[in-house]
Amino acid sequence: MGYIAKNWREVKNGILSQKFLDRVRPEARLKNKMYDAGKKMESQILRLEQTHTKLKQNYDHIFKKIVECKRNGNNENESRARTYAIELQEIKKAKNKIAEAKLAMEQIKLRLNTVSELGDIVVTLSPCMSLIKGLAPSISTLMPQMHTSMEDLTSMFSDMLTDSSLPQESMTPIYQGNTDTDAILQEAHNVIEGKTRTAMPEPPTTSLQHFSKEKESMI
Image (tube, rainbow, N blue to C red):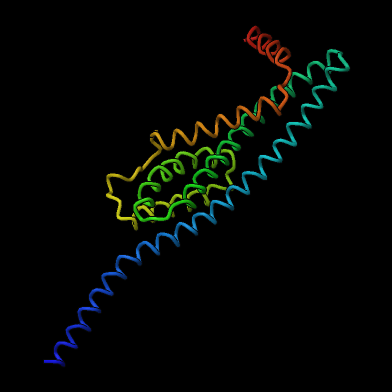
């Protein structure tokens, strides 16, 4: 009897240990994947920041050219100023979109870093996945060289959602607005608007408007 009881205790302990491992391993795998996703996002954020810096430098350079053209004041320079102003608007749009994408990805990474429990992981991953899918097309359009890496990041989040045992119908196949994702995007937008208005001079709109009217009259 003692032998049987001893064997039973060993089998029982083995079953309990296996159940414990089955519960722990998925969470450990998830956290490892979240760490890898975080490192991937760090790389993306750095590339976005480098591109934003180059656009900012280009913006400042062209703005100085506009000032020089306006200072000289003849017709030829006025025409150049209008051309530069149009180019400057496009640079500003791209720069702001990249800055918004960078801030949004920083918010996602921050949320991943603060997750500690499996339940928190499940709740956090879904809106993050939605936001990543929403950012991917715009980032790929502005920076085609990041298309593959953004697809990889989307795939990593999809794998994490699968490992978290989140029901299939709860996964977001495409970007859809919700409270979490909209809050992140709005926060990023507000930061961009605030920084842009205080730190970035506006191109000469009078020349641009005048050029637009001339263009309309020619059509």
